[in-house]
Amino acid sequence: MEGSLNMVGYGLAAIGPGVGIGLIFAAYISGVARQPEAQSRLQSIAILGFALAEALAIIGIALAFVL
Amino acid sequence: MSSTAMTALRSEEFTPPSPADFDLPAIGGGGNTFEFMGQQMQLGVTKPMLQIILVAALAFGFLFMAARKRAMVPGKLQFSGETAYGFVRNSMGRDIIGSQEFMRFVPYLVTVFFFILFNNLMASVPFIQFPTMGRAGMVYGLAGLSWVIYNAVGIKKHGFSGYMRLQCVPAGIKGPILLLLVPLEFMSNLVVRPITLALRLFANMFAGHLLLILFALGGEYLIVHGSLLVKPVGILAWVLFILVAFLELLVQFLQAYVFTLLNAMYISGALADEH
Image (cartoon, rainbow over all chains, first blue to last red; front, side, top):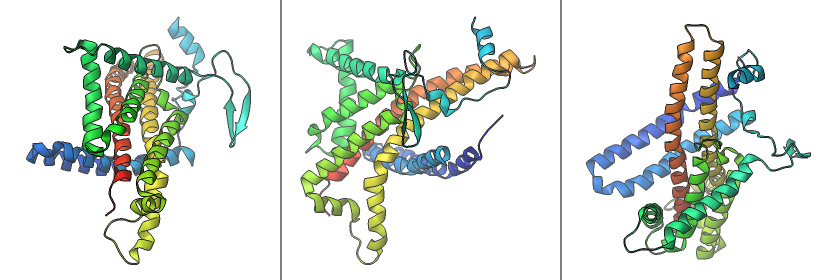
């Protein structure tokens, strides 16, 4: 079986964004649980934070294939 | 036929799926090849190109048929069309861009949402089963369009220098720290944004499809070539294939949603008043 060390590196690099996205949605869920009427407001902030955190993982996967 | 043909095609060694599985040959035999930026390119029409045209027709057909009757008591089709349109209009347009200016952008947002959603769903339609957005070129076009739109909207409202100040200088910060922050904000808001926007959609579709190929081929390999005790694991892999396929449906919808939502957010950021 063949493989590339890049993918192992990408797996390690994805831990950070994974934890970050988990924290963002944990905060979002508890925010909605405390104040359900704020959902539509929190949702866009949560998705924005998710997009920013996920950008790191995306840059990682691009570099894993390119390098 | 299939199992003997498959074993003849694939060697005894297990060959894991690779990005090369996405390089479909041109329809009607390979055409000419040419060099482009150090890459070997094919001249010809491939399956994703046909899909993107089919999807454009489907999305137009669905929305046109749903909007055609405009009955007071909507039928099933009109109801589903109205619900989907209302979802994009209210949760992405009105809530994010704001009730002042959002109507201008609703046609664009609805188009982008349905176009991407139908393209993504192509990965799960039997006999097609290929994500159009799994080819990076398709996505770069969409992200480039979004980049042009939000920048043009911002420049039109604030003027060029005002817009650059809005995007590059964070509010309420003075002093030498700006030397560090301005280049960072410039990179993040004007350079990296379209790239991450494109790669997010591409990477999700690509990785999901690769995962499905892996489960299908791995299961087939275990069942055909595995020893007696390993064969049930192959069946388990196929069960997982079905479950992951359902997960993919969720991801396909979510990515269309996120792409449209980010488009709306970039537009609202470009329209924001100066601080």
